[in-house]
Length: 402
Image (cartoon, rainbow, N blue to C red; front, side, top):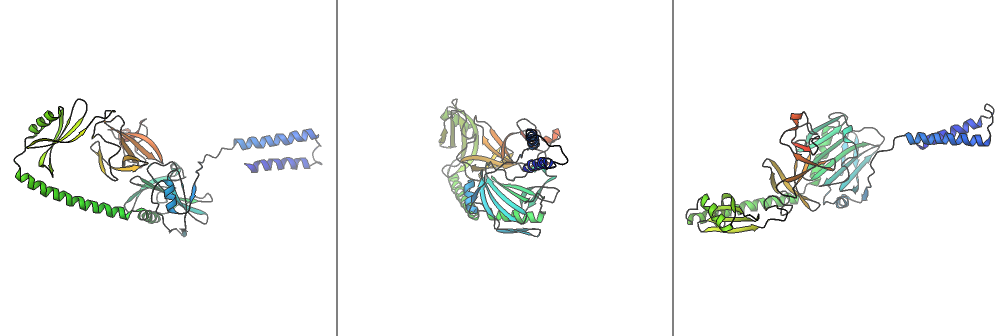
C-alpha cells in the first residue's frame, strides 16, 4: 500500500521538474496538482482489499509443560526433531492461546507447527483455510485415523486427528509464500511420535490394574452369591416381585430383572416410580422387598437414570439411543459423552436440561455447532459428510451433515 503513495508522489515531483518541456504553473496550481495526485493514491490504496486474516495473540512459553499449563491441560508431548525430505526440524519454540498449545519448528524458509487442544478451544488448530485445498482424504497412521489436506492426494500440507477429547493439528508452512507438503510416510512418522509422546503410560498401567482388581472382585462375588443361593429357597416369580414392590412403594413397577448380589444372592432387581416421580429401587428375595435406593424427582422433572452431568469417571462407557456408543470425559469442569462419527467429526453430548433426551454439539475446526440425530441417512438426499461418508448427524437447519 505505502509503495503506491511513494510512486505517485515521485511522479508528481518528476513532472514538476521538467520545466523546459512544461509551462510553469502558479504555486497554487502546483499545490492543487500535488493534492489531487495524493488523493488519487489514497483512493487506490482504499480500493485494495483489506487483509482478512485472523490475528492470534500467542503467549510465549519456555517449555512444552508451560505451554500445556497455559492451554489448560497437563501434557504436551512433542518430537525433539524429525525430517521432511532433506529438511531437519528441531529445537521447537512453544506458545499457547485460546486453549491450544503450539510447538513451532523452523528451518530455512519453511516451518512446521504442531498444535494440541483438549475439549473446547477458541484458537484454530491450523491457520490455513481447509476448504482451499484441492484434495482431502483419510489416512490410517499406526492405528490413528488422520484427516489430510493438500494440493493433491498424497501431498500433505495440513493433518488433523482426535483422540478422545484431544485434538491435534500439524501444518507444513512455506515462509516465503510457497506451498509445502510431505508424503504419507513422513506424516506417519510424525503422528506416531506425537502419539507416543502424549501417551500416559502410568494411567494405562493404572487402568489395567483396576481392571484386574475388578475381575477378581466380581469372581469373589459370584462365588459368595452361589454359596448363598444354594442355602436359600426358590425365589418368588417376577409377577410376585412386581406386586411386592408396588405394595411397598405405592407406585408402579417399571422394570424387573434377575441379578446376583453379595448380600441377597440371586434375587430380583426392581424399579418403581410413584405419582410424584420419586424413583425406588429394590432387591426382592424370598424374604420380601429390600429398599436399596430412593431418588426424589428433580425440580426440572428429570428422574434418576435419565443421565446426569456428574457422578461419572474418565473413559466410562455410555450408550446413547441404544445404538450410539460413547465415553464420558470431563472438559472445563463439565462431563460430556463423546464419540466420533464415521466422517471423523467429534460429537460432545450432554443430557438435555429438561430431561428425557440429549443435546449434541459437533466440533468443527474448533467451533461448536449444535446438531441432531436424523433417522434417515444423508445419502437419501444425495449428501455426505466431510469425509465423503453418509451420515445421520445434521445441523439444526438440515443443510450440513457431519
